[in-house]
Length: 273
Image 1 (cartoon, helix red, strand yellow):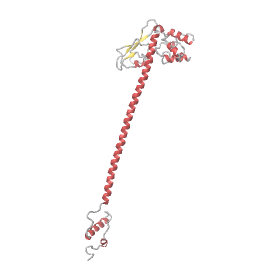
Image 2 (cartoon, helix red, strand yellow):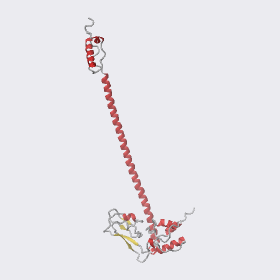
Image 3 (cartoon, helix red, strand yellow):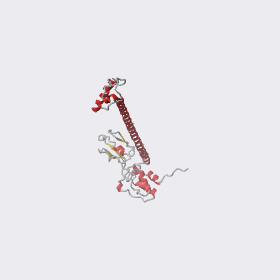
């Protein structure tokens, strides 16, 4: 099985200096290479590659050699970013802008540019809020590919890919942390809700038990008969019946079962005499 051959975009990308400066109008060297391969962009839009870069791209594409598009900038000596330590506030915006991780530092601490890694893209200059970054030429009269080697381009490309992978990994890890945090909050909320439901159910059970006890007491009280009312003498029964009649007349309750003698007003004690 043969290995996949490099595409035209792959070969065009390999001819670019990998500064990732976006001066071509694309977000990096790879998108520019893909646009050239598709015929959507001319090969004269890369200032870091200069005239030599245009010649190489034209040869691969089989197109005429064109002068560098002045809208994209000028071919000039390679520069590196230099940070004024006295002015740097440690905002990290330059670190976020650097496409090859050539700036190191921490929040609220002074940052430093790794000169050997800097591609001179100058993307870190614009976002600096205190204007503490300057682009300093380091190759004198040498410009374009004369100021940049293929080895440097390959190393810059590797760092660019490494940074992209790191950003993807960090984003995924951050998303995982946020998802775990959200899941923990949801679990806590569900536990709290379940506890509230259980508490309400327990309170309802207590109220039901108390209500049932009150109802039983009421029914029991209604069912209680007067004490010492059994096996009494006719005279005492007559008194009880008379008292119940008075209570009924006063609207305090229903009269109890009256003794036959009580309905006539006869004195039970003398009835049989």
